[in-house]
Image 1: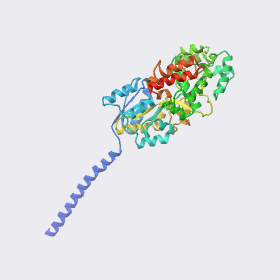
Image 2: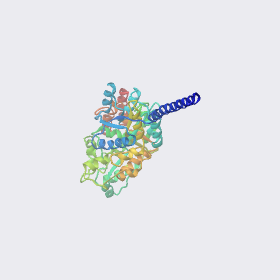
Image 3: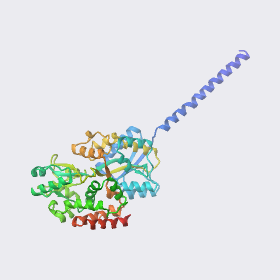
Image 4: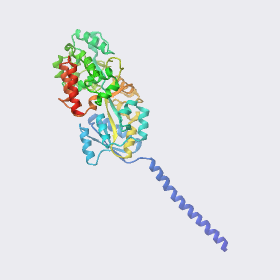
Length: 434
């Protein structure tokens, strides 16, 4: 081989080496790029749920893992979620995701900078699947933090179907119709309603449903934030409406004294005892669990109607819910929030029972019975939904036994003829709390 040919051969060999090196360098870059677009690893999740509820939620987490490859480890917080998270945050070791049962707690944690805002994927999933009210409930100062995965309908009024049939009354649609039905049922020999007034929280739910329909959602929000006082005329009007029912002791099983000595589970049992001690009981969709678990009532023995419409402000649903929030910058936390905002995630628990979703795109046929489906549909389709007002208050005013709202509404049941005095007492307590 002459000198010229040797030179060409050397150049050709160098080109092959360079090409091989370039090929070896490009391949890892492609792999790296793919890794950047896929989230892996694990996510720690904390919630109050135990027993059957924990098992059902674990099924949701297992499906999330199967879909994403991200492992999800669950831990129960105990009943006081706020105290548990406070300790974990202070110790620098919060869970990646927590389920918050109180809108006020979400607001507090966001305000102190303990929450990570939802990313674009979570926001898109929420906008696709939830009504605007639910996005607002999960937001603080315009930033979305919470995905309301589990909801509760607190605008359901339950009744003994046999008592209604015997009295010849139909489920009422308006407050006036209900007062007329109460007279007819009372005349048949059964008091119209059982009230679990021994648990003050039940009375706050009564007031909230009346108030939002008397005053409308804007005033409801103002009262919840104490932007108007509890002595506002709208509050007094709502108390006057409440008094139309509780002011007549003939309507109440055991009268006023009986109501104040009755706890919530007993108030449900009284309606389905043999013979029944009352025809109806007002409380949330969780009443169904008490009926099936603690009475002998069977399907067909019980039903519910929506909280009767009061005044002209329009129908509304008051309820509660558990919001998933991220407490760390772990990208897997955002993946879980986005998943929980999908109908597929909600349908896993919905099909098992004991669950209501606010997701508008959940197939209601997955619910295990017609009553649950109706209640859930009312939540998801509500034009106006507001969170339980007492849960939005400082705990000393809105959530403490023997104080604040609990105590003042128990006092009101005893003296429903003086709504102005009740409103003044409520305002005095609220002013201290705020």
